[in-house]
Image (cartoon, rainbow, N blue to C red; front, side, top):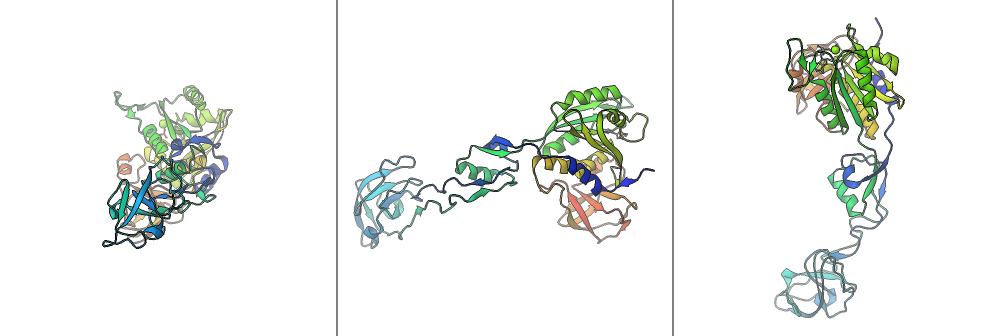
Length: 405
Ligand code: AMP
Ligand code: MG
């Protein structure tokens, strides 16, 4: 029997082959959700200029310092500054200028008296409460100083980072594109949902599941659907798709059956490794590059649970490397086991499970066709190769399948 390759070795082989996609300028909103591929330095301070934090009157503090309920200070109002309408840029002592929130402070003023502390006068204003020196002024640079790093390379751009970059005037940022991933199922028994089934056919679950998983990982899936177990047909379908692929993921056709055509077809056309990984489910695996552009291709086993676990363990890290996300592999979390079980010696086991608040319960049976159990799981318990039995209360490592990282 061919030797079993440890999971970590297969992951390393994959990550050695995968190179991040090229970086290019993308419009700010298109880059939402992507890791930025540059350090962005503030080209100016934020706020960019001293401005009013309130609707009120710009004044010279000294003029209004002793205003009180029983001692109103009267000042002539010599002008008005609205946000985006700063015709007036300076004022002299003994005057007030009406000013709106966000409008630039006139030079000479050193405090703002909010409307609430005045009679809201137009030609002249009565002030009955004094501001402190500098009060209600938002100073240039008090949020961000010019030259400060706003967003550092590798940061995933979420709404807050996008907002900051827009505030600093960036219309475009350097980022990697979303990887285009061609997803193909193989199997003459497969039919698309919505089509009639005969007694020997089943619906194609994998191409939908894997395409959805690609999308959840930030890629753009192209679901080809299923191709029959026909070597020439598979080869043709694959080559038709390669032009638009940064990555190809197939399922089925890599075991030892009589009609496992993926392996046969790719032996001729690609630079491929096919073998057995020391894991359950997901033992038969294939990985390599295909076509003139050397597009990386994963050939996953056909059982839906095997295909899904293989995606999590092998394809997801590759997709993340293509995009420049770190870490590549999903980090494990520690959890306490509610029920014991046994595990094969010499193979890592990935057990479907339900995780809640650091407690984890295995779900369902071992069969890799049990897609119902898979759907009611939110975690995989990772049992190392050399562990053969686990007891209730044991501490285990889990992969949380829906957790962003
Ligand atoms: P294979 O790896 O092609 O030998 O397939 C293993 C098992 O998974 C068989 O029972 C297949 O019918 C099933 N299978 C393969 N591909 C799919 C798919 N796309 N959706 C659902 N089941 C599948
Ligand atoms: Mg098959």
